Length: 133
Image 1 (cartoon, rainbow, N blue to C red):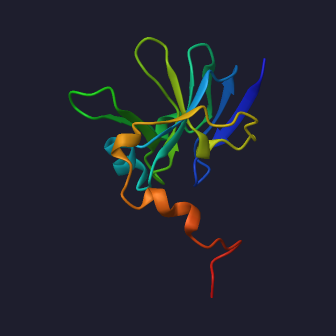
Image 2 (image 1 turned 30 degrees about the vertical axis):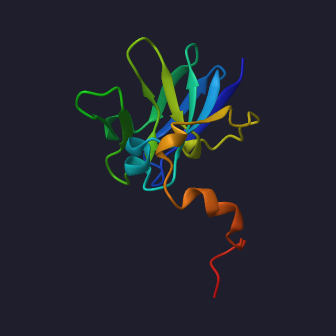
C-alpha cells in the first residue's frame, strides 16, 4: 500500500492518503478554471484510498457549487486546495497539495472543449527557473 502526505500553504492542515490513486485528470472545465485561477485543475482520484487528517481538520472547509457535483475543500486560513471525499466514496486530491512525489503521470485532459483560449499556446511560452528580472 502506498501512502502520500500533504499539507496546505500555511502548514495548519496536514494529512495522509493511505492507498493508491486510480486516475490523474487535468480538468479544463470552467468550474475548475474558476476555483484554481488557472488553465486547469490537476486532481488525483481514488475509490479505495483513505484520507486521514493529521492536523488542522478544524480549518478545513468545503464548498459545493449548487446544482453540480463540483466540490472544493480548502484551508480557511490560507485558501489552499485540499482533498475531499465525495458521495459514493470518491476521494479527490488536488495534486499540488501533496508533499510526497507522485510517480503517476496524468491519465488524460478532460473537458478540453472548455479550455482557456490561451491554453493551446503554453508550449510556446519561454521558461524561467525563477522569477525573471
